Image (cartoon, rainbow, N blue to C red; front, side):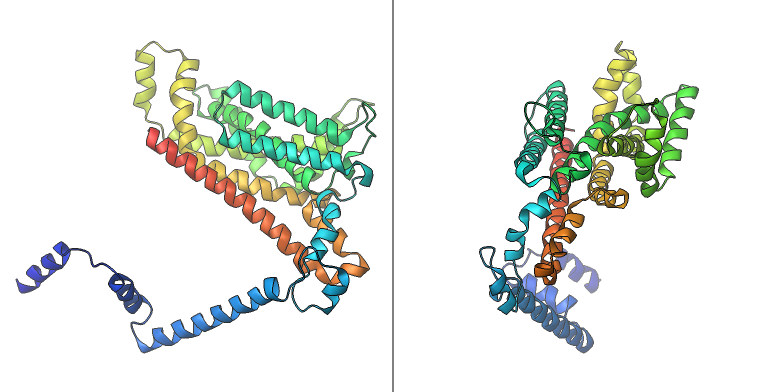
Length: 365
């Protein structure tokens, strides 16, 4: 009885303020025994040692971006001057030096379009028009061959514009195709259902590398005699078909989570099938599928680095070109850190935007 009264009293006691809760948590989780105390102290010592070494290498003993190779040779820290010296090569690879402004302009245009698409509310038709317009303009900028712009072969579209072009427009094309596949698999029409299942399961069983090889070597064989297709366009097509299957499965999870009563309620109101799908089914299914689609988008963005297998140069490949220079061979770590930081920030922003979108949709629901 006494124990019950004490338990109830502790449960009803007001929460402790100040440092007391923090000290209590530390004592309970990190210093509860002599063995836990030793492990905690050793771990903290290693973390402090690692943090100080990293700070020294990255900042205190590093050569800044404005430095020179001579300063890097005498420094014990990072040589960030390497990145400023090789920035054009890392960002654009073998794109002609005199035309690099076109690659930078196309990259900037795609980045601005992605930010506007993600952050600015607008009608679906305007979004679609903006994406198609950006795809056409950036393609023409990179390709040239008109209005006095020299023609540049697509195998020279390296580095940042290549991965932005492939990742952004692959996702833009694969998403609506994924919706159609998901609806076909979800439908009661037997032929549509079987066709969607066959396509999705077949594509998901094929390795990504095989898809890239199919785009470069098999797709041109399917064209009519005399017709040609540029490698970038071929990769864009096969990646679109590949990721559409993954989007379809993400969206199907949202469709299956939708209560049937809502569809029946829409039918009882006299809505047509198209209206029920557009007004009731898809808004809720897409909201539910946001976490799965976020995983697919992040995975596809990182997978663009695999194009190096078929002879196209992503950011990692152009970074290797940069530190292949005999004068700068010692600074590969700086280049890889910069590329890793770029991918981390992009993936974090995608994840954060999806999280906020999911929370906003949850509040609306």
